[in-house]
Image (tube, rainbow, N blue to C red):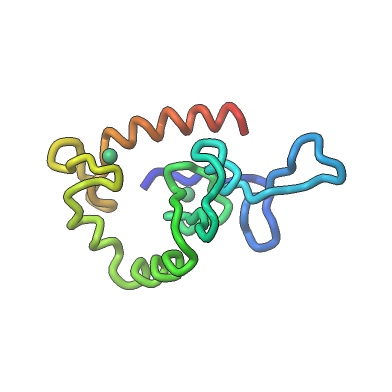
Length: 131
Ligand SMILES: [Zn+2]
Ligand SMILES: [Zn+2]
């Protein structure tokens, strides 16, 4: 997994905190949600932006994914026990690119899709310049 990008300002629960420019009185948002929405639009109702890295202060787009609250709980569970077995068995990335064609294998983290990685890097650069 790539290195986390941690936001310096935090809520007391550990999540990154960003102030909305120009708001009076100051309003603040969860940084990881804010970053996700800049790229993907509003978070659909009932879903949450989750950290695949379990680092609440992290706002790196490739460490964030959308899921339900129960996904989130289940995720923590399986991660604690199995350490990502599902990932190793996958034949396609979540976007449907065949791993056989596009993936490189990282001995700790399993297959990475090069097509999606390239797209994420472009987005990350864009976010960095706007945060
Ligand atoms: Zn992270
Ligand atoms: Zn892909």
